[in-house]
Length: 176
Image (cartoon, rainbow, N blue to C red; front, side, top):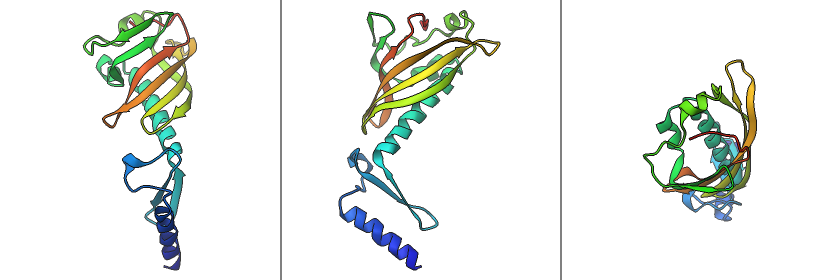
């Protein structure tokens, strides 16, 4: 019981000292998130680490859903309008009814799935993030057709993360 009291006292000290905010929307990137676990222990994590994990999980799920080859599912990761930079031209995508990916064209390249190699959060705030995804497109034999980076600029609008800009390093990356 004494440990739980000390834990609670420390947590209250952090709260009173301005290290955290009770309101999730008002948290700053350099704040600490304090959570009292069911066993009475306290878990203190910088808010920035929580946001970075949220962004990594978002991009990992994006690849997982890309592999379903369902255009409507994949499209749900994008804000409209958004920008796509796959060549020297910037393509502005404003029509939410237009598919973001032509999966039939993609399959014609030999693609059966994509594999995540690395996800790196390059910048993160509570409403903006820049994430690098290194991935490979895999053929039916498990060979990498291509390995490249994509850079995603993510923004949180109305409490929903979405892609505002996507940049692909490879020039031969047919999507539509």
